[in-house]
Length: 254
Image (cartoon, rainbow, N blue to C red):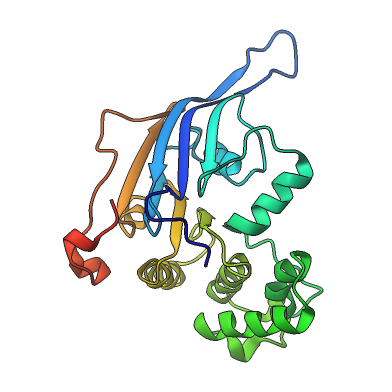
């Protein structure tokens, strides 16, 4: 995976605001984000949580380069993304970002292996190298036996594992997950959270959006949002124990 220098945050946001202009003159603009300052260290596992409409998914879209902030700065692995052209943003996403969606967004006309290999092929890897990487990831996530299958025959939990494998294809700096257990039953959700913990233990930086307290408790740090801001009325960060992560407290990421 792509890991920044230990002194360089994997993600830094400073004064990030996002306003959606009204479609009609008689409507008011929507201030989705109202000045977000946030720093995430390499290798951290962070949950961003809050009620619907608090701005957490908007924040994730800005970090992924899928939308642009109205104001403020976003740096990924020390590289600013504000003002990048569409082409440069696409390059940034290929280098630094893997996204896990709630509803999978898989390509049903491709095999499981082809779904995982596609991002690496788009990034310029040879097909053989991309498919070799895909098989390594499918093996890591426990679905290598489904490589030649269509995504349509997989269970919900397997489809989300496939989505995670695809997100990891280009060894991203940040693995972004938007309500990754929202479409799964409780057993499937627990499997995905355990997988995230394993990836975190291996050094992957994970930023996960959720509205579910139990899901957020899987992370080592919780950032609460309310009304487009970091909610100062609740702890911004909560450290988890070595019983959860298998690491000593002093080894946990800040």
